Figure 1: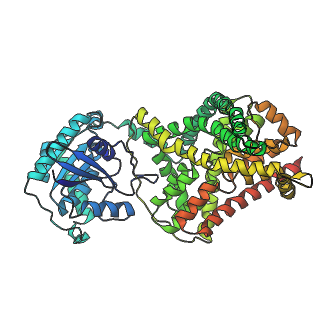
Figure 2: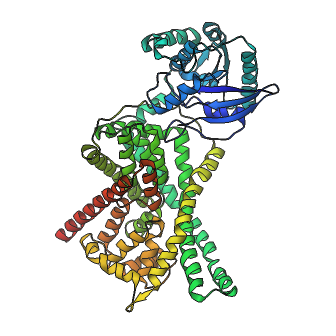
Figure 3: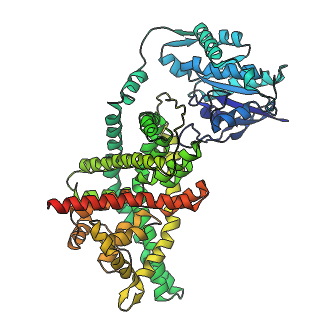
Length: 611
């Protein structure tokens, strides 16, 4: 069988990914926000008579490209190598989708129109006359819905076979594509409206529930508090649910430390080497995994549920004007939200921003959002000093810190855009996707493999070398004092000015590979141990911190500095790779650090002045 190329085209959020996965059997998640669908996805679609290379073009609104995504989609749709186009439309907003369809039909006529989401059409008391639409456009029109995948696949196979047997031809080659061949945008939109009025029937005038919900979530007054409450709920469930799994996982992983030590001794390694590997590298690794995995296993699926439901684009919509005021692109709101999971992933996600200046603004400020690696430390400090009696109170504190991170992002973005990254903000089209019931199975799989295991893998890679370095610093003595204590003494004066101490600053420095190990390092130094200690009892840890001079001011400034300091090593490397220069990685290191030091000095001055 000869291979033919078919392109899957359409606006963002019309269910192209569902159609693509149904036809190819590839369970691959794509989307039009937060860094996805920038390049084409391809898959094999085999029928009884055809071997099809199905190309999933990025979602676009027009062939008149105004972004990288639309350029990729246009080149794909207009390619002379393509032997047909399947245009996927959202039946609930057919008029808007027909604008792209009419532009493609102006260019070529080997086209099939697939009206998707027909289940949503019925819920909205609408009817679409697909036969009439087929007659008007002069092409085959089929209707589909995601819950009937077998029927969808059968209809599309039948339509494509008919298309490829027909005497159709491309009107213009891709190289000869000229935008003036298209009607004016106004004429195309008017024609789309006329066709939609002809084929779409609304049985009753009733405001859709999603419209009423959007009036709340996108309201400039109500939207932000509702957004905060939903984040509060996510953090409360994460805090409430992570404690017991974390404790059980910690006991399990640390139970392997002694057998590892004994095994190394049995094969002839010296005591120092055994301690270095078992009590240094492995202990740090076990600590990072046990503290990090349970919150991630809860947080990421919930965060993905909000994404699938359609909440994240509403956050971006609400924050768009704020970023425009900072002379930045509204897409930065999307990458900022990604930072709640992993700053390194969010930096890579900044590729969705076309302007290099605005892309740099998003990369340099992303570390001000607390990533998953910082949540365990923040939760522990909040629980010990501010919310020991209430998990809800702890969730309120976490939410307040996230809000502080958002405000700090605005401030730093504005400063950078007025100094070293001057320029005017660009515009972008953000479509609010319809609210959909998330597919729980796919959410769990995607959050585990795409996010949880990715971030955990990063932590594992950096935790083992970090454990080795920490062990060396803590166990090599010079003139009766360990190397790590020389570092502590060096940073003690700066720590006092910031309301912290040299131990805390040293822990943050040694925690550059992974924020998860900051508190264990603090405990190790305070207890004068040569290896990290287990923190299974927060009450014991609290008493240890208090006996070493911690106050409410210390706890507050630890949280502030955790929010505002250098990015982790992986994020710094990602910034260097994405920007192509160590200069920008250096600025991303210094800028939040200066903000953190400045704010800690201010809070310390105020605290000491009044007390």
